[in-house]
Image (cartoon, rainbow, N blue to C red; front, side, top):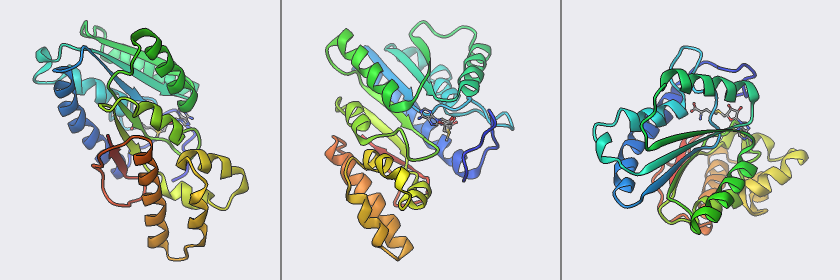
Length: 245
Ligand SMILES: C[S@@+](CC[C@H](N)C(=O)[O-])C[C@H]1O[C@@H](n2cnc3c(N)ncnc32)[C@H](O)[C@@H]1O
């Protein structure tokens, strides 16, 4: 899929599945983590505009609803900070207005932060600031749902995973990796994405399924090296979410 240029774009079936997983995961993660920690973070690193052309909610709204509509809401007493990061100005503006319209009065334990910036730099800065405030990383659920292979470095995943209670929900962008694997201008991005140069071996694998599996397994291995301990995602499938904690 080519990245859309309009502020909002049509919803596709794989996004519906991704949103269902996000919703049910957040509904479980929030009360479980809230019982042990006074403050939690949700980072939507590639937040988008918050809605699709048809009006269906995007991941930031789904995450907020998972808390605000939660049947155990009154038992979720932790402070929950939602950070919505987005590179595109029209999309972050759209999202900001949408959240203000849909949630005119947020519960007192919920804070929403809108960050117009790029994922790697913004998450690094955010985690540095939080570490200064609290001397250790907070439990975090981070959704990493990019359109391509740039700006979602393995080093950033390692920063999130520095807290063993943190979880990553990653869309593994196989079709972009496969397309850009022989494009010289994307070599640095792929080095950062995988956190190693070994992805180049995938260029020599002729069989499509084996190549896909190679890239997927390498990425999984690198996440484990970065601190991920458990794997809860599907097998190698194009653009399907990978969930590691
Ligand atoms: C796949 S869409 C996100 C969809 C959203 N997560 C949802 O499920 O509703 C990817 C978004 O990332 C934004 N984006 C692209 N590069 C980015 C970067 N380096 N940092 C942050 N956001 C970026 C795009 O503008 C786009 O809105």
